Amino acid sequence: MAKYEKKLEEDIRCPLEYGLTVFGGKWKSRIICVLSAKKTLRYSEIRKEMHNITDAVLAATLKDLINDGIVNRKSYDEIPPRVEYSLSKKGESVVPILQNICKWSNIFYKEDEENKMSHCQKCDYRN
Image: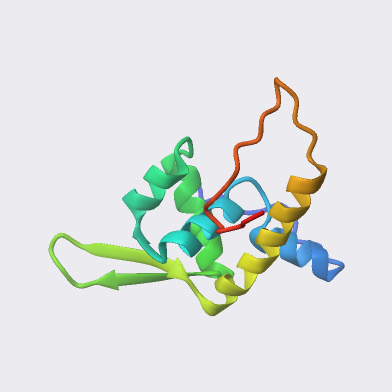
């Protein structure tokens, strides 16, 4: 199987684009919030918290977050092997940004009967 390679290099032209690349998207912010709430988790524990994410997407997303310095991965030399994930200092610095996005969304998101938003308690945002 051939290794996947991006066709184009990332073209980041402003700080906002960098930030959204690092912690934007469907899964990255959720993983950051879960690790913020739970501190340290093993892969299977993250998987349970994330519900409907596939293993391939979770593994790839964790790899991206590790490469960007948001998540720390610690391996223990044990049998069976144990790997734990936690937020780095850089990752912890993202949490207030995500909390502010939650606050903004809570103000401006218009719910109706078909579009109910469940309140995320993972990033510890409080009204």
